[in-house]
Amino acid sequence: MNNEVLIHFYYGEDNFRINKEIEKIKSGMLSENEYDFNFDRLIAPSPSEFLNIAESYPAFAEKRVVQAEDFDDSFLNDESIIEYAKSPSPSTIVIFYFNEPKINENWKFFKELKNKDYFKLNKVRKLYDNEIPSYIKNLAKEKGFSISEESAYYIMRYTGNNLLNIDSELDKISSGINVDSKVETEIPIEKIKSLISFSKKFSVFDLTDKILDRDFRAAFSMFDVLYADGEEPIKIISILYGEAKKLHRAKIQEKSGMNIETILNTNAVLPFLKGKFLKRLSLFNAVELRNAVRLLEDADLKLKTTSYPPDLIFEEFIFKLNRL
Image (cartoon, rainbow, N blue to C red; front, side, top):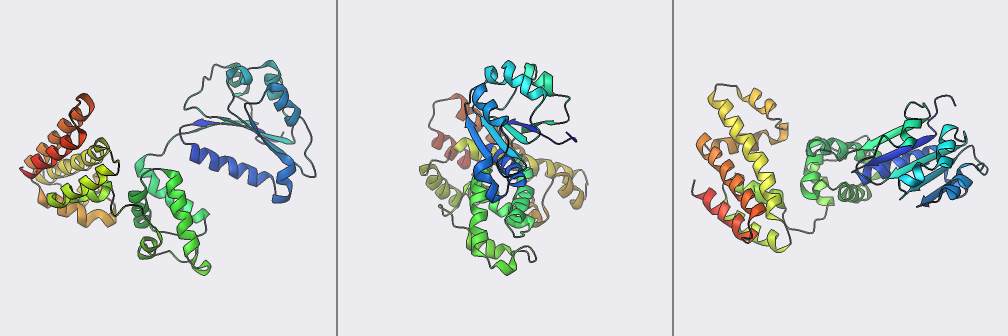
């Protein structure tokens, strides 16, 4: 089999990236003319239905691709499926898509295949927030244009970590730029901002900016609008907590005599956020930041354990923070 992967198995939490990887396999194996006759997507197939297609020859092509999904362990551990997996058709690429975050590697199917060169097990986890800007940059390149890390961060701030929304915004950018400017020239952030249309006048991140900049009057007004639009206070608290902890740690490091560049590096402050971070560091002293962290912890506990109205809990937090 020349170490060719004939059976791919995908599972995990990130459906968007799983589907992207599957599309790459399909497009790499089949041309547009070959696709209709040589690709089959099987939803909850029976073993006989799967084998009937997997064991058939491709039509006017070197390969056929079979994607099976929405199956359970009884399908995967069926003796006929196991027998096929022991000696798969060299002209068929099989993609199993198990839409669950975990698998049981003790299933007979996996025990049979785990050491086979023609089998590849792919677990696709959700990206951490600090990995998303790099992913956005790579996704933009796939769509034919280049953006800076600052632009990627800007896009993430307004879309959140939903990769489907990010993909949609990148499509808007791609359709709005001149073809000649793609790839060779980086699209400036001003152009990115003008091409992306948002449903809200501001986001959760704008609200957290106002709070960390100690502009509490604006923060109250923004929160009222966001809460009316369905934004959850507990999500805002979570974002603020991470930023406040980082500032508190930096303030302690500053008092210990650590130089600014080391502080920025140890707290993973991106270069284009350096000015904003240092400004906020000057707006609070160490005691205020420690108390701010405690207020956030208290608000988080109330949101999770009491029936008190969430909007009042958050507004109380802003009021107390203003009194520090």
